[in-house]
Image (cartoon, rainbow, N blue to C red; front, side, top):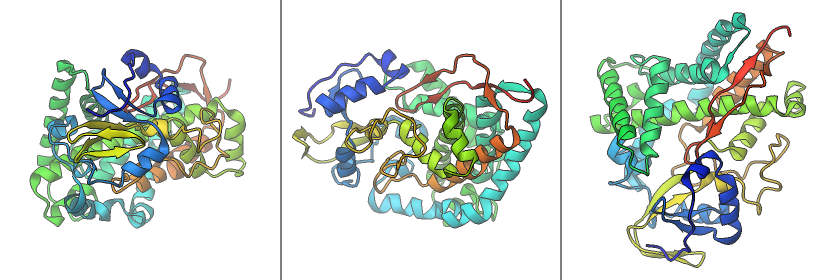
Length: 385
């Protein structure tokens, strides 16, 4: 075990709002061992940025980790050449050019249909009716797994997210995750070979082993559904509760992509990234032993007072470029360009253009999570008062 000082957490409180505890750790115990998680947490931006590129020490390979055991060994759980082989295989799908020339137009078509279906109702939960549905439809397009509906994309993604964050060992959560991965395997089997740029097609053409294809499609569904969904819904909520900042966007004084970057800094949808210590090492006065498990607390790093003034404040005019919501090393999120296009070029500008009188209903908006965090509902109304 590391020599980091011990910090105890109430995991229920931490799930409700992790930021107070993380702020205290950054100030007093920036690298801390948390017995309730059986992990050592790195909470400051500089420590994480120093550690993440050092894959020889802070390894992503975790054969006994929850993600590997439940989803299979995907590219996020490989380092070095093995990681790059699979990253190169999926690049034709997620490259900036593919996003610009192929996916963005298809995302717009999907968003137009979702918004058109929303219009007549005048009210609803936009977490489900807009963010969840659009994210699922975009993921069907990008992954090539059309055998799953957008609802099934969300259901399987959430079950897998819950499974890989199941550090308390809840057997019901584990069983739901296994059921989700079995459904995805069946959907892959039902999808014929194709010649498009979707992820399933390009991995098949690249000749990746079947186990790698399945594991990486599951990874794509977890990251490609929950994170864009949570950012779309969360950013709508953030802007509706900060109308003066929304107006800056509507007036063209601030770009939508700037609002996106600030939101993922302020309320990081992926709050944690796990690593395993591959060799004895030291960092910032803490010794780590081979086999130790650590968490890079990305959400905490994005609130690091050394780098972000008043980090708890949502401010679309802020320079948020130092954030590490997508990672800070060789495992930088491969889907970052697609996510930015879906949210900042499609979902948000199209929604606010189509529904200029969009507003919250006043019903409570709930938030939750620390490994993965976002709003859980978004009751809204639109049309004449």
